[in-house]
Image 1 (tube, rainbow, N blue to C red):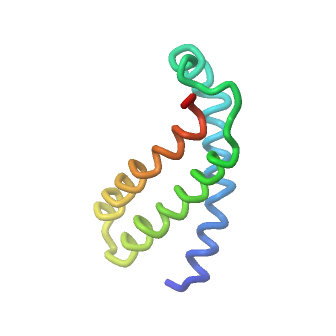
Image 2 (cartoon, helix red, strand yellow):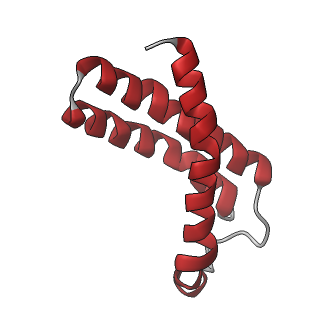
Length: 100
């Protein structure tokens, strides 16, 4: 796979990831977060932190999970690597949405 392939994959993943997350946070789980986590949520979203999280998370998934998984031709390897990327980026997600 070429660099162009991964760049295209990254650019195509961004709007899809945003759409899914907006659907989840804004519609499907909105009441859950408000009812159960409102004491932890910041009154305003820290957009620079949120955007940094999204761009790093997507890049991390592609660079550290998808690419090695495609190279190894192993779905188990891809899943294991994606889990590690998810855990490492959780701090940015919390920083963007919760009170300090």
